[in-house]
Image 1 (spheres, rainbow, N blue to C red):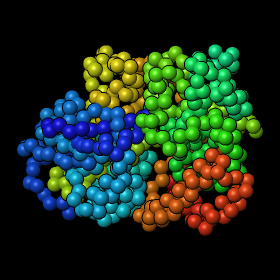
Image 2: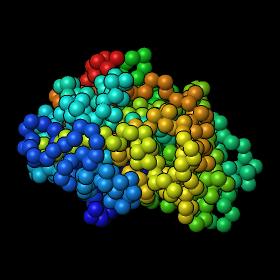
Image 3: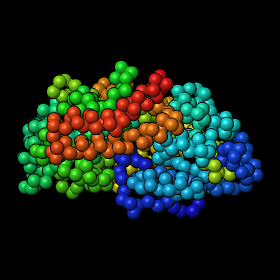
Length: 533
């Protein structure tokens, strides 16, 4: 295989600069009567799947933590087995939207999109236009492993089926429960001990601890370089969304909650206002990192791994991804969700065990049948495990019917190390509960499981589900939501930083949201939710 550079989507959600964007990932595809037949004989079973070697060109949505797909042992083995050469072109997450739109507008399509990055609107729009081809017949004929999963799990099949009745994308099904609560709040236990402070349980106690971190030089270097609290504003894995739960409301990318089967727009709730006022108090007293609205993922994690320990509290999927394995083991502990002034103690749970958009085949693909045979290999247990958890004898060691996760090298976390050697969550496939039962986790994943058990009882029992919209609904959401989202983020930043007063702005802010179409946005989601039920 030709070498190319691929940086894949990681659980830490770090973002690279625009210069980090090159290259390759792949698959193969064809799938519609509109597609010209390439006269390649494709076997429905047995190997190789084709009688003549073919190459599938793929564009992939990527992020910084993965190694080169072309050098990964399981990909090479898949090519050798199937006779299908996989050629990857990877686009970094920070420039994905622009590049993706250029590709779709140009009409010069790859054979395959892989890794995610296609919105529901993209899937609906380009499926309707024929640029993404229907997959359900191909699944029935050339993907026995995936077909069996869909037949046994009608909810999954429903979730990946577009409102027009077609399936345009192939999912990654991940039944690792901690993925549903990806963001955790951590605190510097070493600093607490040095200052003689207890682990905070409430928002008031947390405020007092952060104030002590700022004023009492807990790292002992004589400088006022401590950052009491840092996060990345408006991010799911590293942001403040779940901390609003201490005030009885939860925020997220869509800004929506489900209460008693009713869709609620969180940033118009009075509890949201109270949360903003608390964040403003922390910010104006210098307890929140001044860069929470501006730093990118690399800049964020650099603070945790600074040579001198400067971070008091932070939010992330796993602390070792922020501060490194040694500090995670020795200096930091997870906090329970904080209890707010009215006794509220909530945290976000996400319906993200199913990621619907991992593969889409385009009408440029001359070999969709062979492509589907290759995709179906990802739904075999042993192969899917390696694709998502790493190479044998490097990341994994087979022990009878089980697999031990080997300790990472060079101070990396398990996630950082495995994503150097496998596609991870950018690939389709399934990690079932049965498969997870065969994994012997390393210590950092065991800690993630322990954190899940701490957070589970506080996490929202009714997260916003995956809702599939019609092309018209998706278009309306796209038009309405962009302006609403930008306005909500703009006002949040101004209120937290003290540029404006939320008390003075609140009524006019809600009125402006109504003018921008917030009622229509809520109603579309409500209609979609009612259909989902």
